[in-house]
Image 1 (spheres, rainbow, N blue to C red):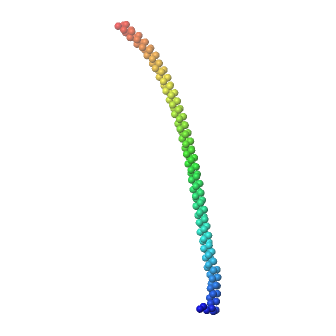
Image 2: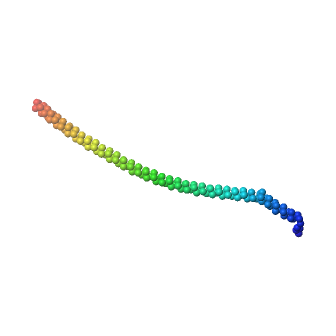
Length: 139
């Protein structure tokens, strides 16, 4: 059986004193360190989650801006393409008009030259016919 004597009480007192001393020297500082570590880890995880959320928001914003820029570039491209086609039509119509004017002028010049050549030929025909008649009559 268990004997309860003075050494038992001494051991119990030593045990309780040791518990208080170890609690003050070892257990409380260790618990404090563990708590700080847990708080740091939790804070780091929260910061990482916040950074991940901000990254996702930034990526979404960047994608939105990129889509808007693409749409704007497409609109500008279509506008410039239409403007280029209009300018091309204008240049072609001007070129056709100039070519038509040059062609009409060339036709008019050709008619004038042809008429002039006919007049010259008629005058020469009259001369040649007079010469032929003279030569024939003179024969």
